[in-house]
Image 1 (cartoon, rainbow, N blue to C red):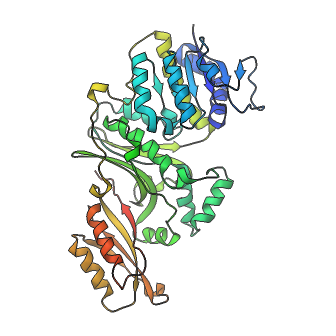
Image 2: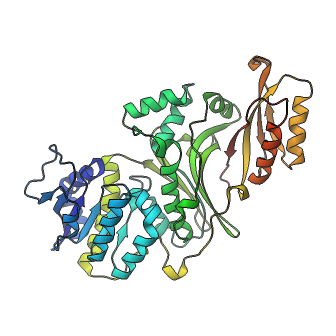
Image 3: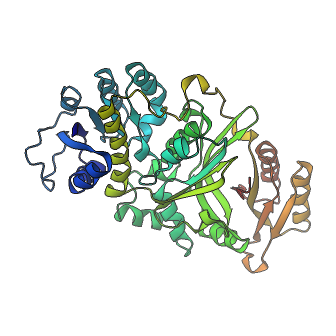
Length: 434
């Protein structure tokens, strides 16, 4: 039986889960692959006394794994940008296949890494970097290979989804964020999660795999959830919507949309029912139509499931000595399209607007007039006298689909009115019907 040696770099949450599942399910994995996948070396900067490595060689220098000639597959689970990039490029230079769960590394440095890997004819796999245990990269690259993917949208950060779920009970953002940190769902510095950066990393990778475009993380639009209030969540529900923090990539004429922001989704849609720390990704293909992939987006063994699926792919390549492998981003290099990321002002969406108006005669007419002048049609408007306070009253408006550029100009004009107090709150809305 062919034996393939794996070296694990990083023994944190995901690294520990990967080691444990590989050891626990070794017989099962061998039965499915016909290959003895053996953890032959482990390196981690912080040793773990709760994991028994037995006689497996161990060190605190991750580059010992890369420089070990017996290692066939390097598993990068240290996270971050700089050291991880150096480690992965060194592994490639040494002719080793690479598996990583590092979405930030792939989103930012993936183009460079894949170019280096192609020259050395080695695999670089990253399934666990996007949506944790959900095998959405395999679904897009392989399961939907016959489809022209028109759009991808998803809840791809469990922390943000947990916060918005809990806020439906009327709880404030800061309170729920603190709870998420206490539960281990959010980091001490939660910026990447709540401001959309983590989701933008993942969306960048999904868009490249779906559309066959280079990775363009630096052009992704990101907007967080820290300004969302229980008031907005409650009124969205009254209008028949739920607020979700979504990543959306859409193919348009002349380019693609690449954006992460709070989004109103019809409550009847499946993705609106995805609560807590769970993830879900919608993919729309011209042949299959709309599909959804749902499950745990994080966690030690859930993420390890995706890491090991990639290890198995690499092990099969080693065992067969085959040059046939799935392209890194789902498309052969010569078939990649240089589609630009469209400016945010070019996107089209419906909008939820919350306007704090002074209780003056004709104020609603003024608001409607400004929107009309910019070609924005109102679908519904809500104003409750019971919410009147200090001479001000919130006005909730839901618009039809319009270009963001038009909405920007309308909001600027609304905020300049003497009858409007403060800034206009804007949340984009999507129905995902096509």
